[in-house]
Every structure is written in C-alpha cells, then in structure tokens.
Image (cartoon, rainbow, N blue to C red; front, side):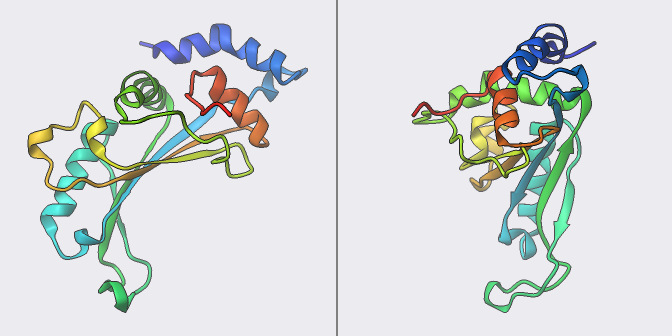
Length: 181
C-alpha cells in the first residue's frame, strides 16, 4: 500500500512545487531522498543498558533496527576510547521514510511543548534540513514507563533539492511547520 503523503505528493503537490519554483521539466522537481535519525549518548560507552535502551527506542520510533555508531577517535577528556559505542542511527528510505515524515508532522510535532515552529535557517546549503529534539518522549511509540534516560536526537531530512530555497518550498508544500517571521 502506498503511503498517504507519497500518493498526495505524486498526484497533487508535485504540480504545486513545479509552479512555485517555475521549473520547466518534471524531473527537476525536488523530492525527499532519505531521513536520518541519530541519537548520541556518551553513557553508552560505559553502560550497556543505555545502549540497549537507545536501540529499543529508535527501533520503535523508526520501524527498523538502528546501526550502532562507534567512536572514531579516543578523547581522554570524555573518557572515550576508539571503537567504543557512543550512539545509534537509522536511515529511512522509500515508503518507511514517507510514513515517518507524515507521522512526524501530523502526530509528533503537535506533542512538542512550547512549539512555535522550526527555524527556516537550519538548511545546509544543499536543500537538506536538520533539526534537533530534546526528548524522545514526544513520539507516541516510546513507552514512558520503560524510558531510562531522557535523551535528544537529530533528524536530518535529505532532499534532491539544489539549494535552500528549493528545499524550503518542498518541505513547506509537504506541510512542514516552519516558524513565522
């Protein structure tokens, strides 16, 4: 079954993006390529249960098993050695990506406390948008009773846009809640 937002984008929203960016070719329309979710926590290096809880939470949030990220360098000040696990990340593509994006915008964002919109300046210059969340409890899939630590996460939405303006128009058309000036 095709995700609701993907079908809506292909049938209606593509034309809106094409008109707004005044593109001539259908293949120039920017589209979502992937969404990367990353949780980093230095406690995972020493506490195995912290790493296990991060994996369980990110699996529940994303619907697929995350990859354990390890330290590339030793940092004495943080008591981290090369190769120690320090975080987890997952890359969503295809239908899972569309379903996550739709769920994020429709369900998760309204649950963020004191939310006034995401900053328009968080684009990287190539049309990709990165945002940070302070706690994983805004996701309804995470069970409050099983949470050991409150930890944040970074979410990067990667698109095929050439510049920030194209990425902004794409995300705004897909209903992303940007902050008003």
